[in-house]
Image (cartoon, rainbow, N blue to C red):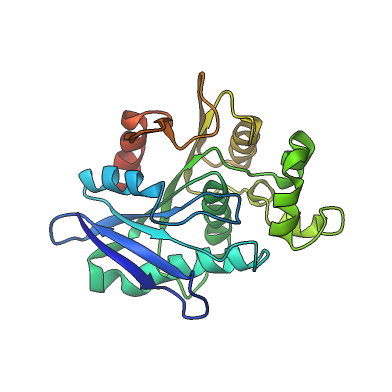
Length: 261
């Protein structure tokens, strides 16, 4: 694969950059847009998501791994603006880099899974005229999809939520609702697979099960995989970046089915 680092998708802030991983060959490559985790307040595109990108390259799938503004300086909806801008960059630059904007998937871990889900539900509902991308699928790992429920289940993380929302949760409840993907499910949401560790004490697995249930009730296609004996993690083993949570076969099989077939 070829890696093009720190491409600017929006000129307003130093974090509005992305890495583009291109498979060998001439294109037109399907593409997965990936978002890192870190509680919305830290993390970087060049960390955890590198293993996902390298695996997808084996399928002939390009990966756009995007940074976004963090909650220490920018509260929501800054992150939503950034993920939409990163998606728009794919559409605007598809021809230049040999990408196929009609075959786009999403992935992310933890806070990144939350943002990928938010983009998946909102971009397919709004159908913005300025974006040529067609979202086909999303694989979400250990994500938060209902912020209010998460705060009730895990009050120790209220400081993360308050920073993300830009103020105390009781005052910013309307912002939490706008930032919760579960509130925007509809029949045209991309095919969704939620993967979660059974022993996740940071983001309980009921976040995935409740989100999948809501998606199915809306008529969308969705499934959940719960991985026994593992907690809040992107990989089956911390030092093996060839095995995403849920397993290599599940990861590659999902994107192969929905982006290549």
